[in-house]
Length: 202
Image (tube, rainbow, N blue to C red; front, top):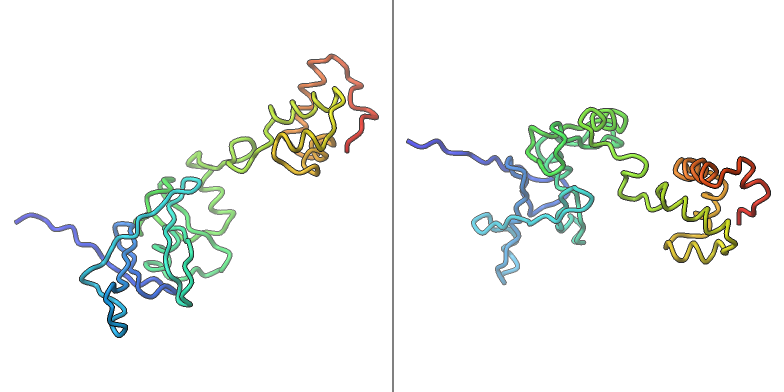
């Protein structure tokens, strides 16, 4: 007799009409019947197809209040199989470092600090220029310094990079790590250790 891979299903707190599965997927059991008394239909369940954002799987579902929301798949699975976290600030960690592996045994609630340490062990902690939200990396900051040194207005540079004028001011003042690295590189390239003294930072 062939072995059967049983899939365990659990309700997801706060999301009636959906089931989390032990294979890392979420099912919708909302009925498509025109009869209003039939809300759920487990015989015609549909797997919610996730979309990927910044490496994490997210699904769209209807919350208890009726509004549609997007939630991270691993959080839904953890809520269903591991319950609410002891501390509301805790986040879900992927034990193998794979953001798309959302089976329950690969998930665990951790503090933010523990999660960062765990990501560092797996080499998946994104910092500095590697972070997806980092627009102004060292190369971009270098270009800003060069263009401002040539006399271009900060507002024009900000518009070209799609950032706010405040961001450009922070770069000119060396208030970010990338901007300080770029500044040192620019000073070496132009061979002027006094560069930047008295230069407008607006």
